[in-house]
Structure formats: C-alpha cells, structure tokens
Image (tube, rainbow over all chains, first blue to last red):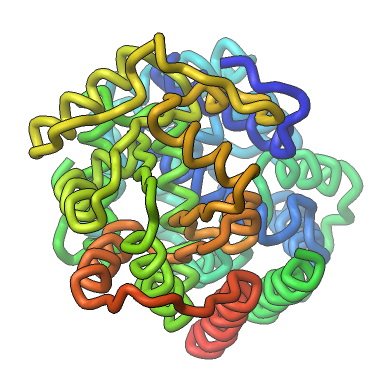
Length: 233
Length: 233
C-alpha cells in the first residue's frame, strides 16, 4: 500500500514498510514484525530522536569495540533488513566478526540473512556451520545454539573472564537492556550511524560508563516526554 | 515454536502466538502484527493490568452503548483474531451492528474476517457490500471507504449531530485516542470482557465522563509505573 504523504506518521510508516519488505524476502520472522512494533512504540515515547543518554552509551560502545580483542556483532533478521551496510561498516572499522543469531530459530531464514549480508559486502558471516554449534547453559530458548567461533567465545568469555555485552534495545526496562554492560536505548537505524561515526572519531582509551545510570536517565527522559506530550495534547 | 514455560514473558508470548495464527489464517495484515507489537509495548508500560482510568472509561462506554440509537462495532483483523466471541456478545447485549473496517484495505482479508465472525456466531456483518460503500471526506487513507449502513451513518452523524466514538487504544497519546469521545486505554482482550460485564450490570442512565481527564490519568499511571519499575530494576 502507498502511504499518503499527508499521514502524520509518514516517516515511521516508511521504516515499517522496510521491515515488511524484509519479511517478504524471508529475512524477518513474523515475530520480528511484532518486535519492530514494540520498538516503534518505545521510539515514539523517546520522541523519535537520539537521547543524550544514548549518545553517552554510543561513545562508550565505540571505545569498547575498538579496544576489544574478540568482538562479534550479533545480527538478527530485523537489523539485517534495516541496516545491512551499517553492520558491515561497523565490523570493518572495529575488526569485528559478524554472526547471525536468531531467537526464532530457522535454518532457511538464517541462510537468507547470511546471503543478504554477503550481497551487501560482508566477507565472512558466522552462525550457519552446524559443526561449530555450542550451547550456553541457562538460556532456555533456541537462541542458546550459537556459533563457537563467534558469540560463544565472546559470551562464555563474558561469564568467565568479564567481557562486555553491548546491545541496542529501545525498551530500557527489558531483561536484555538491564543485563547488558552497555545498552544503547535508540532506534537501531539512527544508533548504528552514530556508532559508526563515533568509532571513526573515538580515542582508544578507557571510558567510565555506568549502564544503570544511563538506563535510569533514559527512563527519566521517557517520563519527561510523556509529561510534555500530555500537556500539549 | 513452542515457548518454554520458564520464559518470563510466557503470557504475552502466547497472546502473540494467537495473533500470529490470525495472520496465518489470513485475518491479520503484516501491518497488524506490527500494530500488535506496539500494543504489547504499551501494555507492558501500563503493567499488563486494567488501569483505574480504563475502568471508568469502560463504565461510560457501557452506558453510552446501551443508550445509543445506532451503534456499530467496527472490527479490524486484529480484534477479530483475538476475541471474536466477545465482539458478538457485545453486539448482542448492546443491539449493535458489526462492521469490518480495515486500515490496510484488502477485499479478500475482509471476506475472511466476515467468515471468521460468522463461524463464531455473528448473524450479520457489514462492510463487504460495494454498493453501500460511502466515502468520508477528510480521511486520506483507504479506511475512508466504509459501509453506509454501518459506521458511515454513525460517523457522519457524529460530525453532523454530535454522536459518540468509543475506541480501544493502548497508546493514550495517539490521534485516535485523543480524538475519540471515550478512549479505553487497555488490552482489548481484558477490556472487552470487562466491557461486556459492565454492559450486563449498567444502569441505562447518563454518566459524566471526561476523556481528556481519563487520558491524562492514563498517562500519569504510565509515568508512575515507569518510576516504580525503574526503582525495582
């Protein structure tokens, strides 16, 4: 359907069509469409712009990625559909591996995502070699099956040797947001671009970053937006 | 996919599977999956329980429906997939017509929704007779095409003779929520059941209800939930 330009949600509706086309091409799961909808709601609440707390998180993420020894970019269908070029750019600048890792496991979809990323310029994409599958104990969903060369190494290392998880999550209250070391509460389309330019500019020295503080600040910004919009309404 | 019971989002994930199955049966549009996702996010923020302000709105809606002369229940694919029996029950109790009215227009999907509602026990469902199509001026989307026997009569009458729009919307800031006369900010699965029992109990006398006040109160409840959850996190 062609969305009339007069529609007040024109921009958001067009990103929506991008994810729907990702679904039509077999990259995005039905559940991925739902997840995108949740993201839309939170993006709406943060005002559809990058918050100050997200910029702080992005800068910390840039330094962390540039100084990491074994960094892996975990990709699902949604992010592959929305910003394949940015994933590859980020991997290049930060010398990271790319791994496809799906919550709703599907070998065919995985292969399509890998192909999509390779078409966009990726040289190597991990996650589809059954012989290098490893399980992480304690995660009771198909997402537990991940590649030993990619996140398995990074994530297990995280538990055993204190490595770092960076995540994009528009919901600052989610489990993922709350358990990560650096949570970027932003639309991944805006956030990935900012992360790439932060990586280009970043000095490779340690930064101090407190995820709890950043998340509290994100929640507080949402509250202020609600207050402001409720007054305007 | 079978969702493990250990998953902290088990209930919400099961409703999600209901909407996915509605999609598989041709009732729900891809965009409907996204809309459900947005609803999930707002339901999460209101604490996945019916707020006090929603109960007030539900009671006002019950009285309004019971005293209305020409009430029409407008149904889209999502609500048809989630609670067909409740739609029919509500129509019976309130002597309302049922009309299928899609934002993402699709004749085939419309027919499937009508069939689904008839299978669930509906006698008459409006919205599919092309000869009774009428346009509402000023709404620049396919949703402007509606049945002259159903919402056209009610909605035009609304503009010309001050009739009333009642809506379910989990986003208290949306245009729909802000322009309706009575907005029930609640999950439609919970809200429809409460609305039906309110209709059974309601006295058919006028109630005073202020939608702006109710919406402000809903927004305020969301803010308080954010505050509480941010503290617990």
